[in-house]
Image (cartoon, rainbow over all chains, first blue to last red; front, top):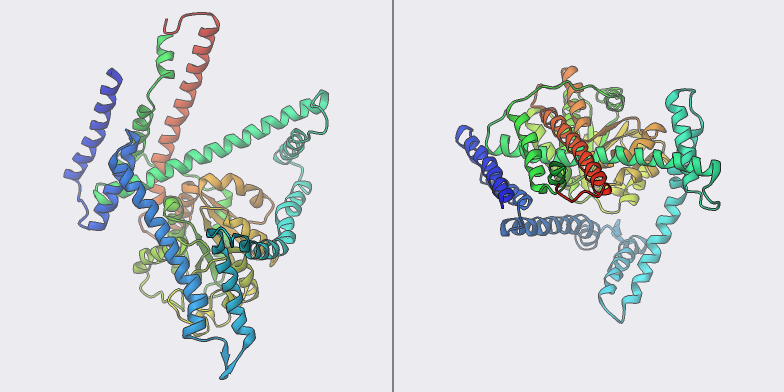
Length: 238
Length: 288
């Protein structure tokens, strides 16, 4: 109970700071900025407790995000790639002659795309295998060789061809010990066990670096919102 | 012992409040902490500087959404300012649906500072096209296969800037600003297959994932998170390209203080954990 009181006092202090800044600053006159500010505060109200303002802002965000993405894909994929070439610009008519090759070049991918929707029917759901097979086959064909080049060969080359330096030595030890940790065909005992243990240390350091960057990213998002509230909305910082 | 027990049971909302204040106060009372420029950020800057003015364009891919805008928007603004001031040409495109909106918003924010910059002459905004791998590969053959028109529906052949630009051979550098794994697609196809030069601006969450590509030379440089953006703002300011408000740099004080608070909380949390653990081992009653 005592702690709850403290939290309420803390939250009231935070709100009071914003009210004070509102009075002292130059609040925005744009209705859009006000809507964005109210939605931002609604989202942050969750930090105290789940509430109706948070739920409203969350649902609105999800709806707007999906709606925006669908409309962008519809406009750029269906309208620009299918509807316009078929019915408006008629790109399959070249020099007043009908080109079956160009026509099928629009129609076949469109039909394959439509087959993706067969998943929503029980009887015809199997038809989705056709476009999925096409996508998996074509993307695997296109991707395997350059993926090996970018993710394995180049990485191996840069690990093997290093200059003699402390950081390069650490990297080599790290790579070998981490690989040993993931070698499960022999029990991790003796030298193998010690090397695997060293690998764990390198993995933990990598996780630590990742965590540090993640903290920075999350704080950056808070900083972004705080800048918006203090600069764009309240006008208390320049 | 009671103190450490209390720390272990502390309501997490106190931590939220503490972090909130740690971010808020440096905005109201700036500390102006020093900011050092790291090599990956300098390398991105140098790679852009090496592009001759009015020469082959820089391709900026805005593959991010509003959820990562605080980190990546400042990078886009800084790059656009650098290019427009130094008369370097820019192609903007998005492989992420919401990225097109981010690029347009970036242009709307920066263009009032450069009234002489004209669409189709100094920059071209291609908009968004679905099919990430296919689009990256199409650009390797002919950019018109992927984007027959720009984002405003104008055919590329009628844009003066695009007349001599067909594929990666005519593009000086790619910079992918991404809040996702799309840079992997760029590096797999544009770099590995077509040998294009590439740099990235990524969110801090994903920065650690991209260091191997930086170390192997597949990326010529990298901007990681808000700090990377702040470094780039400093670089273009040092060069005299802009006097505009530095969005990322302003946030770095808050970033540093919030990190110190988190470090402090981690240390306190660990001490509390081990202290209460050893107390339990000794058989002492909880809270004594």
